[in-house]
Image: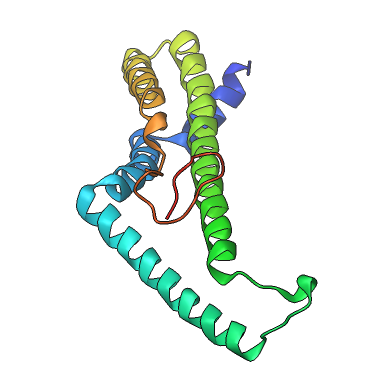
Amino acid sequence: MCGQESLNDMLSTTGNPCDDIQQLNGAISVWEYLQTAEVSERLISSLNLFREELAMAQIAYDLNNPNPAPEDVIHFVDTFDEWMATSIIRMEETSRNIVNGAITNMDALWTEVSTSTADEDRRELAYTTLEHLDNMRHHVDRINFPRINLGIRFPGSGNKV
């Protein structure tokens, strides 16, 4: 833990935790927005339109390369599906890690404030902040994208086009 001087330094640079909490809520809200039916359907529709374009490009490629060597075979749609699935999973993991890390760091700071400060208002702010952080921990699982509705295949999900 930190001494009173460094705690005061942190508090002077940390300021009001509301901005940080709003940013974390915003990160979670983006994923909740992506899960709404209208947005999800539009995104999935766009992805599937792009997949159709890739399928047409695949036909043109195959017509121009009728007997490719095995190492030259390209599967445009499958490659895109694999890339997109991996990218979405990576975005989810990165978002969860960032939010969880920020919650952990803020929790440590505001726990220190709650136990170290004699200022009643600052202690009240710390307790309120800790309550918000605890609540936020239960919302991190909202950072996901529904796999069963996507036209792309996710590793191990069993969903097929």
